[in-house]
Image 1 (tube, rainbow, N blue to C red):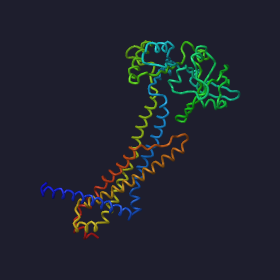
Image 2: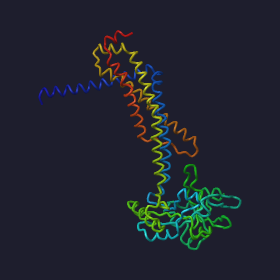
Image 3: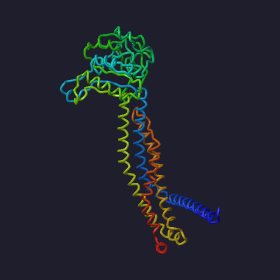
Image 4: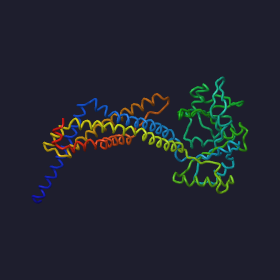
Amino acid sequence: MTTNTINNVDMGANRVQSSFYAVQECLRSALASIRAHGLRSFLTMLGIIIGVASVICVIALVQGLSQSISQQFQGLGSNTLTLRADTPLEDALRGKRNRLKVSDLDQLKFRIEGIRNVTPVVFASGRGGADVRNGSNIAAGQMFGTTESYQEVQQTFPKYGRFLTDSDDVTRRRVVVIGEQMRRDLKLPENPVGRFIQIGSEWFKVVGSMEPRGEMFGLSQDNYLLMPYQTALAVTGVIIQPDLWVIFSVADLNAMENIKDRVTSLIRQLHQIKPGQPDDFKIEASDTLAKSFKEISTTITLVVAGIVGISLLVGGVGIMNIMLVSVTERTREIGIAKALGAPRQFILMQFLIEAMVLAVIGGLIGIALGYALGFGIAKMIPNFPDPAVPWWAVVGACTFSGLIGIIFGILPASKAANLAPIDALRYE
């Protein structure tokens, strides 16, 4: 290696070391200036603190709710599809109502390959349910008629007793399994198996009590009663055209879209729907609601965070104003530094780092305050899930705060760096 090469390497290393010391000194000077004017520095950061705290609070609440809903839908499985009738609003207002047919269920079972656990769900005594009695105790929950496959499709199982069986359905037994909320409303014991309850004028034996699923959007998911499918048809007296849904699972998750297309084509053919006419049914995945809510929550988060983020610009203007005042106050100091040989880049870096440090500290305080606000608000709302602050929100808030400091610190820093040494020293 030649002497010139060694000298060039040494000079490069010295420049890197000098730059490191310069940044270190600028950072030390910025922190010293912030400490020396504590109240003014806090008031300067206040706009950033409020802006970041507001954004983090909104994100924490929405993300917490979104995660809670996603967890509740995880147990349903992503391979479950629901086929149900769909009636346009105009037809519903005219009293017309589309329904699936029992023949649709039979055709679906035998003509579509790749599906399993096909189970009908019929709403007994209307969608709103009927009064269920246990002595003087009354519960008004939803009543469904279904088959043995329901528990496999919905991934919900009895806590006590057993589920409905094929023999219950074939013989139209008067047996039911009930949800936890209905059990409590009826004042039944923890294990209600073997007890008899009354639905209208009919008596039913409780053969199972389902595992609790909790609440969603403040509504109980356990206020229901299940009876055999054929029993529900017999009790309601609607045999020809019941209010029917069909739930089934897909054997191969990769074939989900293909099976949806095949089911759509089959039902359109059975319902004699002509090309160009809208479907009178819908096919929905089990996690459709979760995905829809996730999309909505993401949109709400971005819109609200964007609106609230405007306050960060206000905080940036505050930083710029205070930094301009600081430049004016330290004009003679700048003049002395320049007279002693401080380069323009050093003066520029000093004020720019000070503005950025103010913004980043304000952002960190805002993150902590925002999470605390979100947690407090969540606790004030009954049954609201705990807030969740994703890592990208923290990184984004810190990065954006730093950018605000740089953007609004450039003007004051440039003004300080461009001062002539003589003029700065004569400034009073």
